[in-house]
Image (spheres, rainbow, N blue to C red):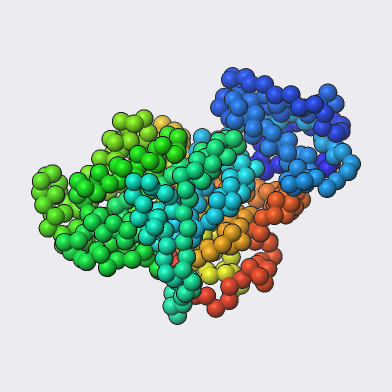
Amino acid sequence: MTGEPNLIPAPRRLVRTGGEGPVGEVRTSVDPALGPEAYRLTVSADGVEIVGGDDAGIHWGSQTLRQMRGLDAFRRAAIGSEPVNVPYVVVEDAPRFAWRGFMLDVARHFLPKDGVLRYIDLLAAHKLNVLHLHLTDDQGWRIEIERYPRLTEVGAWRPRTRMGWGEPVMWDERPHGGFYSQDDLREIVAYAAERHVTVVPEVDLPGHSQAAIAAYPELGNSDVIDTSALGVKTDWGINPNVLAPTEAMLRFYEGVLEEVLDIFPSRFVHIGGDECVKDQWRASPTAQERIRELGLKDENELQSWIIRHFDRWLAERGRRLVGWDEILEGGLAEGATVTCWRWYRGGIAAAKAGHDVVMCPQQEVYLDHVQAPGPDEPVPFGWVHTLEDVYRFEPVPPSLAGTPEASHVIGTQANLWTEVVEDLGRLDYQAFPRLAAFAEVAWSQLPAPDERDFEDFDRRMNAAHYARLDALGVGYRPPSGPHPWQQRPGVPGRMHHKPRKTWRGA
């Protein structure tokens, strides 16, 4: 490879010093003065020097060098026989955000362990450093809990699966399921740590919990419905079957989280908190008695009481609670961090109240949403988020930019829910190439969205990065549209027909 390095994400500073040649000796060292995750990469006739602000910085510098070394660096075995020339350069770089994440939903459709490990490699290649694993939901429980074996014996399996959204209702009548053993997850955590990726686990509560209630009916509101008749949910959508606000439920999930903490060393533990329908609590004598007993105003404050309980419980063990922006409702727990998915409003409110925020608005960076408006897109869902749309995403909204509260936006994250993402091929299609655009937004110091040079990014993708994805075996969406084998004709979708908001209104 010769000429322009075509780096993704774009570095802060790249200087061509003249000449090029084969990669020589690679020397590494740490200089804390550079800052966390920062690096300086120097390639010259004397070899390669990577100086990192820490070990992570050295790793990210090595990923930049990897891009410069050509396609063989992205294959599992080299196929070229001649040494590759690389340009002599000095690259000085540091990330904009400390949290550069990707949320992978393995609850709706289970992704076997090898697929998770592969995605850790893909995140690391793009300098993304957080894998948020959504491990539990109504449609499946994916983490082995030794003291509660029915969570996986029952909760990890469903008898059939809805195909797509909307009408006509269609079913895949094959059972679906799977789970990770605790040793599987320890392997995933260790593999990620070697690549400077942190795995943040999510165990969702008090909503999105039907799989757990199917396994242990006493967790549900049994004074309102027959919880013993519930099975693992087979279709999609917001679900009224939520956890009962009892002491027994709290002790149960404390037991779950004790094993979660033993597996995941992450400082952050995600407890969900989203889309908790309060109808059963309104009808439940037990829930209403708990509201009176605690002196709470309403069901929103009851949910806040549950979140605050686990916020304290995690803090006592040196961890931090993170939850979706619904945890703001009824009052935010003292130490909580918010992953803001419903536009920017919750994140703005949390930041102004002094809470840390990870921005991941569905209107901008939900990668399960459709990539183009054409009829060939498989199972169209959500708003159209093109590659350019993702490249123009701005994590810090204008109302926070330039204020002290902007420092509470600790990062950003792209989310990929898997209701209609049934396998690894479809996952690749939804994630890429948009995840490459997101990686540049999360890492690089880019201009304001309207001023960003998407044409340059698109040029770099076409000149080099699509070929790297090919070498990695990623089944991305081609710029010209899906291949015939990537389409799913006849499977109904559900589009948002109202225009999506943009960052300008935030």
